[in-house]
Amino acid sequence: MFTLRAAPLKTPANVNLLSFRTTVEGISLTPAAGGSVNVPLNANLYQVDLVRLQSDSTLLALSTNVPVGTYTSMVVSLSDPAVTYCRQTQGMAGCETGSVITLRGAPATPIITTSPFPLVVVRGQNIGLAISIDIEKALSVNGQSQAITSVNLGAANVLTAMMLPPASSSLPATPLDFIEDVTGTVSSVDEGTQRVTIQTATRGPITANANNSTIVSPNCVIFNLGNTFTCAKQGQVASLDTVLNPDGSVTLVEYDPLAITAGDWIEGIVGLPPSSSTQFQLVTNDFVLADNNSLIGSNLELGASVKITLVHPKPFQVDDKGLVVPNTLFLGATDASVLAPGQTLTVHLVSFTPSTGTTLAAANVDFLYLRFTRVTGNVANVAPPNTFTIQSFPSFLGLVFPVTVQLSNGSPSTNFDGVTSASDLASGQTASVRALYFGLPTGPTPTPTPLSAAKVRVP
Image 1 (cartoon, rainbow, N blue to C red):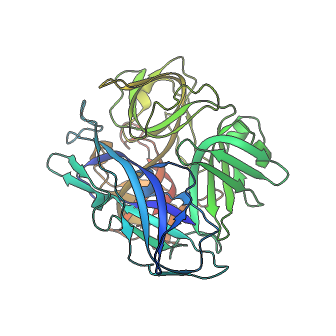
Image 2: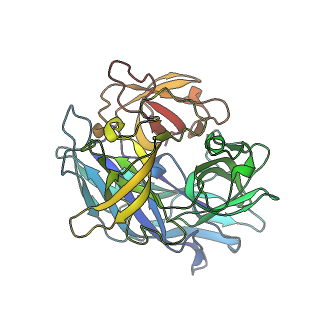
Image 3: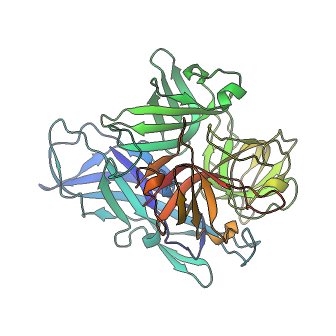
């Protein structure tokens, strides 16, 4: 079993990274006796945004047919790398107008020879490996101009691997890794076995099994679907939080429906301040395709900027998944004035125009969720179990002082990777979070906890 994650840029980063996509085309293991053993990917062309993987892991590949023996290395074939970044004016939140740039790199086939290789596989053994892509080593950055000058996934030590489970985490005793925020269309539900399958747009399907500990998000009640697994229905758009087990099965931790019918959705990060009360831009980090007559089809790629226009929007919602969140002006709003650079939104499309030349893709949307931003900073102070403060963010967020991160300790709770709990966090550590971002803690009624974290990873 192989999962994929990313190590972040060193903080404070001198560049504002909005997206870093690549396509994994293949994985193979090299036996000591020679030859090659291919490991099937979860999708034929497995596309990921590495910015999302600063805090998260994704299920990359699974094989039950790896022959016993000693393996000296792993070969990973990568193509179509591209970064989207922007410049920021000191003292101003958001990217400079016209500064959002996409830079492409060349395909690469890095070979991992360091620990845990050589790797010995014995009969009946279940092995999990996490492949990590080091963003810092893959990019050349000019800090003075806030520019990324090259993308090289074939540079030395960009890829490493480690045995799963992590040495420290809040995982239960048995599972190997968290596989969270798997968003797509529900392709099947079996209420008898309590099994649900999500089809993602770029990373293949995931099938998860519910158990007595599985919870459903408050969206189930909002949609009048109850508060048990029976909330899950075929054709919904949903997000799954899961854990990967040693036998290759996946356990459902939380089921979170986003829509009760299939449709086209784009998830992306706000880079530029909104241009009007009805228009703003997103840099695409993920998307969902309708099963039939998709508006997007094959006309959108990760990292692409999309001009969004609100058309008769329904009141905005916060996809809080039951986490502890502050009161916010975002909830129930209907215009773009409440949006802030650094927020991640998921928007429902009613029309879509592909990009042509230098003209951005454009979408009319009628609904949006506030969803989870992935961001990295340095721990400033810790107040376990409920909060910690973090600083040294990417500059386009405009967060020049340490801000408080809200943690959740109930059901659901904030998950940890690299540490077992908030008590293990320490000042000066680098931490990547997946968190709802409510905007700058300023104004007459400042948000006391502008970040509410679902996940904290210490790389």
